[in-house]
Amino acid sequence: MSYSLESQGLSRVPRPAAPIGVAPRTGGAFFAAGARLRNAVFLLGVLAINYTWSRPSPVDGIFFCALLLTLFSEQRLNIRNLILFFLVGTWLFSVFISSVSLIDNPLVVFQFFALTSVVLIGITSSLITVGWGRVELERFVKVYVFANVIAAVVGIYGFVTQNESLTWAGRPTGFLDDPDMFGAFLIPGILGSLFMIAQKRSCYWYAGALVLLSIALLLSFSRAAIVSALLFGGVSFLIFNRRNLFKASLAAIVVVLVVSLACLILYLSNDTFAEMITGRFKLAEEYDVGYFGRYNRYLLAIPMILDHPLGLGLFEIDKIFPEPIHNIWISSFLNYGWLAGFAWTLLMVLSVQQAWYNWKRSHDKLFLLILCCWLSVVSCAMLHQAERWRFLWLLTGMLWGLNYRNFVSAPREVPAPDDASAYCKAA
Image (cartoon, rainbow, N blue to C red; front, side, top):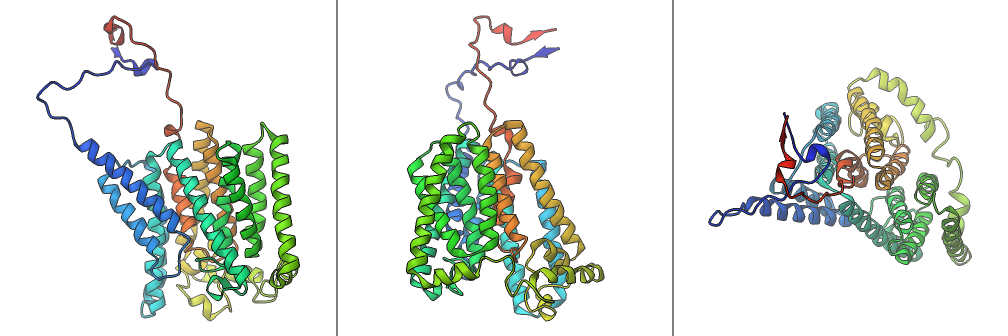
């Protein structure tokens, strides 16, 4: 029996260079360059994800290019990728099966393409992040925060000027579809800023980003997004600063005071803000209560789910209720059938398990950051029609793609002894 250096936790003696006259392998350099290009295109898609005005959106094409570039990169594939593909494929298959009889409706055909494109974003994210380590993941956090800063600037400008193209019912949307989507989009950027401040990375820049994103989130007047940000922001703050809680708390108080001062100025100078802050922050709005209100629609959906195992189909709920179901989990059961509902349920449960598994084996807080970001968005999706939230699928794919082995520190190298036979003995 023989054993090698790796089995003893040591490093192998470097192999000698290729003999003169033997051509070096060029495929590795080609695929490495392809991987770098793929990552760059992927991050460009993250920047562009805050623009959804056009149909289809350019961001879908960018992510699809990143997916195609996996064919020309050092792409890895593991069992977690295959499980994700099966779950999201089952969900998407159920969407098609539930609505294939409604294909005469152009809106249904468009929704087929739209939902396929967002599912592909999740698949792309899982494939690209398989080989990511700490450096690549931190770069993603920086790009996402920057994308959020762009969205926040546009949203605040739209609210202050009440630009009809950048607002909906007076609430800012930025370049996104609605203010609730806008608010949910900003939460991971807030959590990412908290993480980078705790890591002492460009603290002043991320503190400014945190203030800006917090103001934009408040202006969205999305109750789900604000509560989610407070909940997961508080959890993240305690996790990231548990060893320096007192000093971090003082810094947090300063940020809260700055945001509060900005809100006070807006309250005194902007009539729209003053009206909304007194009218929006209620446990239930008019459209939440009543027989066809949002909360009662959840109860009314139960017998319809039981009566339609294949689902009602796309847009059929509009013939029954005055508004969509506004809950991505119930919507999967109700609109797309039991198979989609169970696939979505498994996807949610196993996504948490994947993130927790990675953290337990690496003890890297970046995994907890991505998990909190994902949970904050999912909690908002439980109160909205969020199937087409690209950042939801983006973060979902990341949970399944990231691998703790890329985050574990390499064992300490031991100098090679003079006697090379020590590295391989026969027993």
